[in-house]
Amino acid sequence: MGTVYLIGAGPGDPGLLTVKAREVLETADVLIYDYLANSEFLSYAKPDAEILYVGKKGGDHTLPQDKINELIIEKAREGRSIARLKGGDPYVFGRGGEEAEELVAAGIDFEVVPGITAGVAAAAYAGIPVTHRDFTTSVCFITGHEDPTKEKSGHNWAVYAKSTSTLVFYMGVKNLPMIAENLIKNGRDPETPVSLVRWGTRCTQQSFVSTLDKVADEAERLGFKAPSIIIVGGVCSLHDKLGWFEKKPMLGKGVIVTRAREQASGLVSTLGKLGACVHEFPTISIEPMADYEPVEKAILSLAAYDWLIFTSVNGVKYFWQQLDEIGLDSRILGGLEIAAIGPATADALREKGIKPDFVPEKYVAEGVVEGLLEKGIKGKKVLIPRALVAREVLPNELEKAGAQVEVLPVYETRLSNNDPEPIRAALKSGEIDYLSFTSSSTVQNFFELISAEEFKQYKDSVKIACIGPITAKTLGEYGFSPDVQPEDYTIPALVDELVADSAK
Ligand code: SAH
Image (cartoon, rainbow, N blue to C red; front, side, top):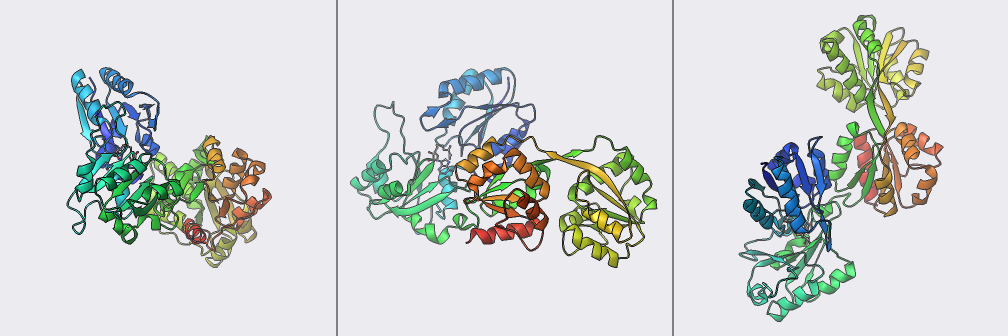
């Protein structure tokens, strides 16, 4: 029989998954997950893992608990290892205890991988330490939504009210008026600070502080809904002083990233660290060439060239892949001068042990030729490993300047076959603040997937960010102009510009 792992997925920030949880997700045969568990974690699963959603959202249960238990047991009996993923910690209001009891009864082995519970993490992200020596000696986790079939309430409001404990209520937003009233009625000071944190640790986090007598009205006025935790106690007075997460410069800003998935990770993680809600929508996919014979030939006759010019990180990647295929390495480039068109490409070369002889100050083809002429490229033989379809400006200009240029396609970019529906839904719901383009082909392909005509309706609410003038020119062909564009044509400069624009 397989082992079942009851795993806590943490409160939402994907970085708050434990190392152990990730290891289990990567090796499990079956993944069974809930509504609150971050769907990003599903990407850790093995390619052939079976993934089952049994989520619960308020009253809308996809599968009732007893059916979930049956399902887990059935899968374990098939001898497969099972990752049962739950929001926060599996044993804190996660019904993990009940599932474990069922497993024991069925004679199935199980392990628990604790997770970071929302009551602690959402509080911390909102500037509230659940214990602090100046305020309290204890903390109490309480359900704000008791099992409705229970005959007698398990709550002892008199004890909660009289204790100096920090009270952390889960699932309590609907019952907030009742909770506040019971605490006051039983003797807690109506002036006690209370805080609500919604979607804690996520880019959509919101929080506020009030007092016990006013908090229900305030929550209603602000439209606070589930999932939120309610924190009651003196520690909430630290909210403003110790709040840090909600100060992130792009918190809650929805940004569409259209780069190819292979290239997007840097931009995606930088924006995420700044608090943005990143919507990955790769419009391009990077594919190998069908035939590498020409590349092989070029590599074997490298001695005939003087310069090698790389225009992209992918160019470097695929060129080296072919070197490797033939059983060669960077030493074969010993006699050549090497240029990188941008800082990221230069870094990719350095990773291969190559210090580029030339990196231009401005990162478009036009700016490069001048610099190369100064380096004496006139009359020289130049090889440019790059994408199959790319702008011809660099080869053309170099030829005009008297170089003998040969273009060597080492990869292809294709229109990604991404489903546009999730992005369409995000645009419709008003979650998107920025649409970012990092090359002309991202523009062209985006409007293949979502037509310019369709996008027009979002013109006023969604700002368009372009990495540089060429991308902006292509955008112009679709009838739009960029709202955000950096001076320097690099990803870090684009991010800086987005941050500056977010502050407006
Ligand atoms: N096992 C989970 C709790 C499940 S009960 C844990 O340990 O965190 C579901 C309740 O948890 C929600 O109603 C809400 O009160 C709270 N919750 C879960 N994730 C949250 C989040 N990101 N922000 C605020 N509250 C959250």
